[in-house]
Image 1 (cartoon, helix red, strand yellow):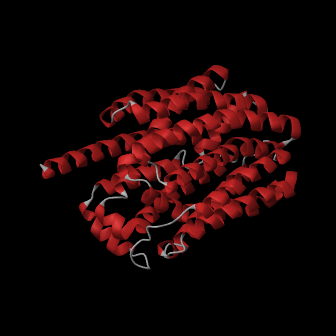
Image 2 (image 1 turned 45 degrees about the vertical axis):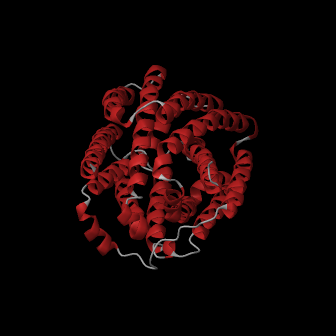
Length: 401
């Protein structure tokens, strides 16, 4: 029997994924349109947001160990409501207030994720992790089929600003669910101690692989600029909201199959082999798409990118959250652990989004070549992470025997 918190966390993450998809696809399209195809405002918005996220997470690190920590997540959701409301009120003038919008988004993400990962880690046991992640991705991509079509058609008929009213309804549902969530596992201590955490983690070299993987994720798709760059290339081919929604929905359908296979069929021992096949193909197709962006190259790249990225994300999250529940971290250092990973993400995100801004001034193809290198680094880091975790599990099994 699944616990109440399990169901609430699952629902919160699902609703969050709908909002994230809307921001990553349709909000990017809106920013590009109102700024006359100038990517500079989008880059500034993203960089301001990512710096704000990290500052908020860092400054709230001690409060994340308090008995009222769940309120940080609730405040983040309320800020999301204010963020979308500000876009509605500013309309086409949103570009003139790009710093404010970036700040609001950063505050929302910072408050929300300052505690969400810790609460989810506490709420989902390791034995349920693969099923949780696989099922979540399956349901996420079901709604990702429906909502892009819905949003795309609505934007086409009613306009972007009117569509955000429906987005606000989703945020209200998040607020209601967050109030229902019971936080029963408060971390030990009242202050974070990064120095002690670092010393205690020296006997866990696999943490280094997790940190490197997070840096590479920040360089690419985890709030890195590459996801926006890819969206811009897709917009070149699918320039209307409806066609963009259809395109997004089709590849969400493919992700449903991958999520189902991960939850029910694919064994951990096959992860590296699958990545070894799909990641190189996705990287080669990315290079081809960047030099010749057309319908065929965009579709082929997104086919393999959807498979390889979903596998990479599932493997990364499974290992990150499972590692967060080892004895040392679970009892004392869970906040320090996720703060360390957020720091790694921040390093990658700042580099990535700075490069995105430079695309407005320098040779775009040269910058894109660097992004391709980042994708290769991410591929290597994911494979090494899974290899190190397999090795660690094998050693632990030997010791138990």
